[in-house]
Amino acid sequence: MRCFEKTPCLTPFRRRIIAMWLQFDGADTMRRMPTPDDPIKTSLRIPRQLHAELEAAAERDGLTLNGEMVIRLRLDPHANEAATILRHIEARDTALMDGLKRHNGALWSTVERADGVLERVAKAMAHVQAGTDAAALKREVEFVRELIDSLRAHR
Image (tube, rainbow, N blue to C red; front, top):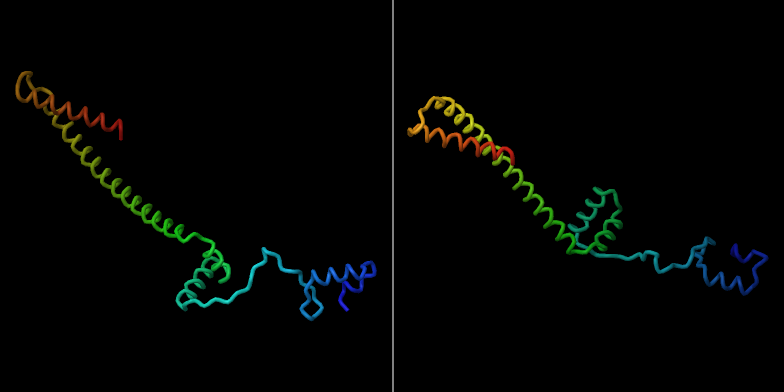
């Protein structure tokens, strides 16, 4: 006799309803009827290499093999491709930005060095007479130094 059948407040009709609702596995332990949300046990044949890959990924992420498979099945396969493409784009962007920063640094180093040279030239030309070729060259040196100062303001 099952445990719900011993309950005195249940009518025979109610007991039959409960018996139809509940399933018993033969050991008098009650199991509820499966619902649409309950997982279904299934068997699957997959290549050994894929199985090994799934096990490694599951172990790495702290999941069961079943958990890893469910996650992968729920993922949009195009999302993986898009994520891979996005990672490649981000890696290239990072490499480009790093390269640009290095080139920019080298360029500014050259500009700073040139400005130091031009400063010394301007000091050496401090006593040049107006109207000479040297005076015209001095104006060009001063103009280039002003350009460099303007560039620094936008660095």
